[in-house]
Image (cartoon, rainbow, N blue to C red):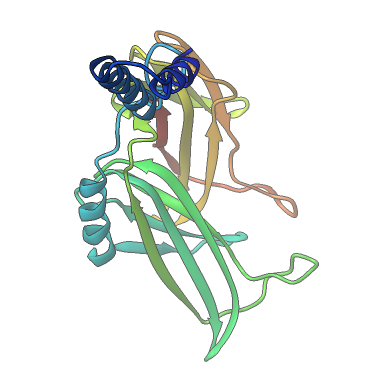
Length: 255
């Protein structure tokens, strides 16, 4: 409708014999309508809202902080197919993503590399990043002597929101492994939840880390039950462990 109006007004402005005052009025209305079209956005009641605006200056400052941050981590070796990088977000910022990359060496020679990442990580959150060990085409592990780890992080841009404060977690050991009940006490649906279960032996070493996550969004005031497998090796069966810890790795909702 606005475009049609501008076209009509444009024609009226070109009509011969129109008084100067009327012409200027028409031009003024045309320019006002054009400005309205140029500034039109899809953020109103038409269902195309993009959510809150991102403060790109703040994002830029956060990027500089994260690029200079010295990440502290622990490389956790296990007898299985993975090593784990235990890392706490101690940057003072919520990160949109933290990515951990590992390069395996045999002496001075690079053997393999692998990476993993998690999203929407608030300050203070501890995660175990699983990194696959080097192996051949038949899944036989290849020896290595050293692992180099690098960490990169992206600042929060407001596309997701951390809602872990609204999550109530209860768990116990059951017939299907570690049973975890996640209750959403917030007023928004939780889109994605990831739990990590860390199994320890009696010497304090990590046997393995298992993950479990929700099958579907958890509505406000609702709960969902999920389970994490116990340590297992195909050659020997269930692996012994002495204790376990449950970590809430990620809980995400719309901003």
